[in-house]
Length: 62
Image 1 (cartoon, helix red, strand yellow):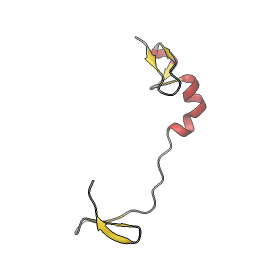
Image 2 (cartoon, one colour):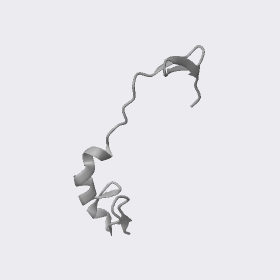
Image 3 (cartoon, rainbow, N blue to C red):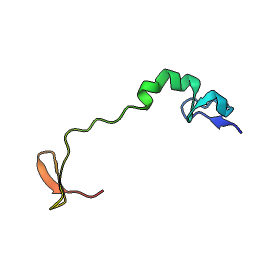
């Protein structure tokens, strides 16, 4: 069975991979691969089901 790295396209045996990424891409970008997006404070009212966005309360759906 071979795997393909989604970053560089390298194909090889699963031994040369860390998760989905080849070792080169994982080592070179591991800090970037696992960054969580930053969100500003998010306020949500469970009673009226609205969220406070851009300075006003608005309808919020998933």
